[in-house]
Figure 1: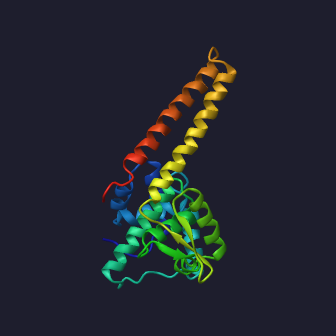
Figure 2: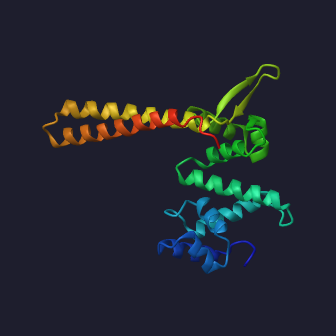
Figure 3: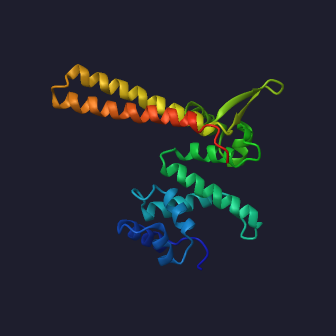
Length: 227
């Protein structure tokens, strides 16, 4: 299997494959590369809908000039496994709509030993500014994906991801959808169910209401599901 960095020609072939609707695995086979290499390349450079080979090549060159530390090819197998899991999880989170920095912080916490890190530890581990960490943890906390604890002895915040993280995130999302449902239904009633727009809004609101209530009930039912 071919090794080494992607060339500009490789990136053009990736762009062609994406335009043809080919999967990452198909593109990887064409380039004789691991599928993870292709998914990582596309995920960090705009995603399948906005991948541009020249722009991706320039971005890679900029990262190299900034001295982004490279993983040693002689790294321990377990380290390589962790790195691959981390990269894949970040790409997945970005693909689901999470901003890149927020995804990196969330996955960094998930893969930490006890799921507890300070802002300083996150900043050092991800090699980003404290301001970037502050923005990311604020967003993740509002979404219920992590929580903040205060260390009274050292007067610092500790950010935690635990077994209830997905529960809290699911509940917050469902409640937001329920609010949207109520607003949509009310708008339909105001415009009148005897009008096309009113009926459309009322029906959409009823649908959102039902799935959000189902999601809340399901979250409670499966909250303590064992691994």
